[in-house]
Amino acid sequence: MELSKRAREIQASPIRKLNPIANATKAKGIKVYHLNIGQPDLHTPPEMLKAYHEFSDKILAYGPSQGLDLYREGLVKYYKRCGIEVKPDDIIVTTAGSEAITFAMMVVCEVGDEIMVPEPFYTNYNGFATMAGINLVPITTYAEDGFALPDNSTIEAKITNKTRAIMLCNPGNPTGTVYSNDEIFRIAELAKRRGLFFISDEVYREFIYDGLTHTSVLDVPDFEENAILVDSVSKRYSACGARIGCIVSRNKELMASVLKFAQARLCPPTVDQLAANAGINLPDSYFEQIRTEYQSRRDLVMSELDKIPGIVCRKPEGAFYINVKLPIENSEDFIIWMLKEFQIDNETVMAAPGDGFYATEGLGKNELRLAYILCQEDLKKAMSIFAKGLATYQRIHK
Picture (cartoon, rainbow, N blue to C red):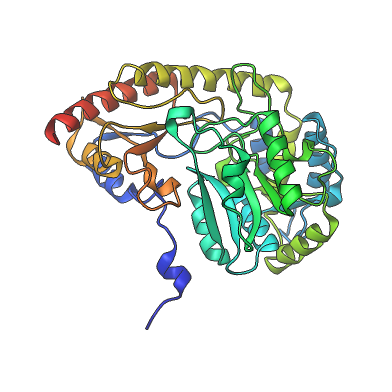
């Protein structure tokens, strides 16, 4: 019996697909520093954990499909602090950012339609697009210039009669690129002029460094019909297991349709919404502290990378990832070799192969993503092992 085209074509996650090898390595008593996945080691705020402990309802009942009113009203306050004015009816709570992205794709596209997205991009966009039956059209960006967006003429050349949207992740995963106010506004102008939606993945909004600021797609005036924001609490509060996100748009027709998708899956998790709502009241000092910590981690990793000959990488400005071009042919082979063959003091390193973050066949083979989500002591050890492993691998594979 033959499985569906979706089943045959959906991509295995480059972030997780090497886990069986890592697990086999750990079963031998070898410590693996996981730089492959964006799972922060920072503690989830106690205010959020308290909401779990204090939940006392006798029945864990269905909630509203659009999310709890309490939480949506809380999100209105959160976005207002970010300078974004929205109403509760502009927000639908989703089961993580993953569902928000999938809803956004399905609500703007027919099967076979296209969404343009700069590559490298968050690898699961590939999976979501396959499940929705749409095609991602890559706008290739390059490590040599910090993965900057090309000019509008290059982007417009990709538009066809099937193009329905442009999607950006700002700050970017896996690149850490922060798109400036001018860049967001020029993409918005292009989208409006060409009748396209602009889907903005703003999960890493709080993690921007070097004094830079974030521009939301909802900051663009007279753009209500085109703008779709997708968001998540996973990284913001180091609560990846909470699985709470949202989709936000002032386009009433679009949100009415998203609500039907939400009704079809019934409701997002109730207790996790209560925990996420508790996070909304955290003071600005919470984000200032974690921003300072992540910036220090980024600087540590970059200082170690700068010592390695042949690497191409410009300092990222946001998120907590660095996408690195290596002086080798195949980063996945290198990562597998590190896990199986290379240890220092019974320790090794795992990263995410770069090709899974691309839609263009053949690109990213010599790149990988490093997530600086470990404490600085562990990062220092991990980067030392990484550098020595790379040098050894290059000697062996000349």
